[in-house]
Length: 136
Image 1: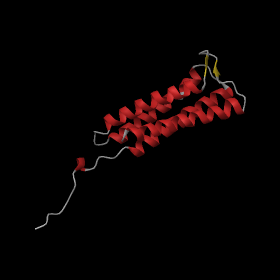
Image 2: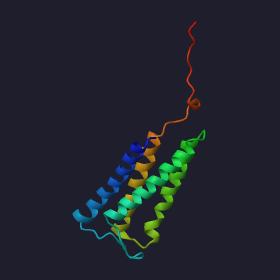
Image 3: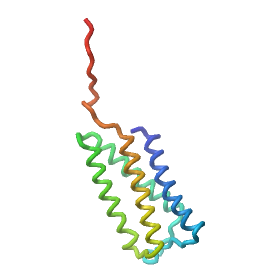
Image 4: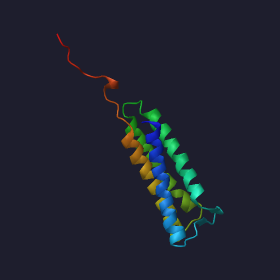
């Protein structure tokens, strides 16, 4: 996968998180503040989280793609990480509508990264060998 392709997927993941934030905060008037952590969730934190998760996912995919079943292993690891990340907002004390919005952000960013990066990673087939016919 090329750098521009990965960057586009990561940008789409961040945009998905930002769209949810825009619908919840400016449009619906929800305060995305995690009381237990004393942290306000805004565009900057969404972009940084998507970038960090996206770059980590991309690097792991690049490493695992060298293995025979690397994309499958990467998909399983990414799915487990996404499921574990869903515990974060609840553990940090978010509740009600804030919890729903934060969980939705996690799911959207994670699914975009999982599907987008996996789809653009070329599967290994025959270690780059091509089969041709010889002319006599």
